[in-house]
Image 1: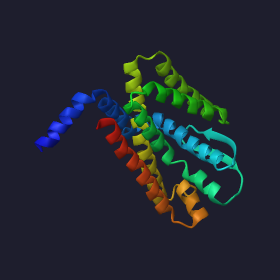
Image 2: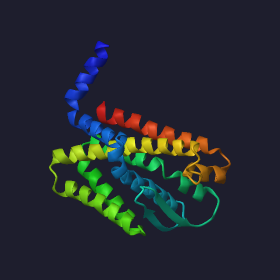
Image 3: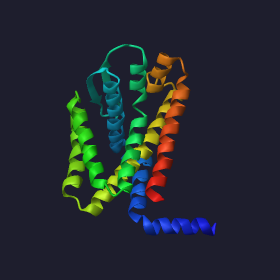
Image 4: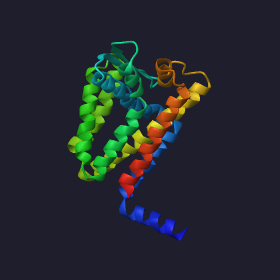
Length: 229
């Protein structure tokens, strides 16, 4: 027990900013009021994951729509079956977690500013394909905040903001998968990514949801190691 206490004390002393960012992000994700307003950032990453994989798979990207209830839709053209469509549906739920983990690696390497500019570039690429007003406003608002910090924030502010954004994507990725699983149990998400994948591959939707859990949980554990140890 004393060893654990000493380890925690050392972490607080060595990484106070990263730990504070983690706490703030965790609160933003678990508190329903803040989650209702901030979840759209996770949706942007989710739909961006669909869009990126669709393009990489050789499918045509028609557009992205984001809705006030924080749901989203990415439309692509191409074959109605096959690996390209499977990977496109597979790209959504892991995207926030993987983006958070990649950002965490940059923050740990003292490249927070670079991480923020990369995030801004991804937001610009997403904005180009947005096809509704609410979606455009949501992406622009997120981009404006990232731009303000990346362009005019002090190095300390950039480090803290970048770390908080990474933690938020990581924790938010976990909560999004939890909401998917709960919705499927209640029969509310009959057209979820997991169920669409089940229809395309004949692998049960629960197994796809389990895969999403593994990716999201593994990303959080890896980020903890990268940022704190």
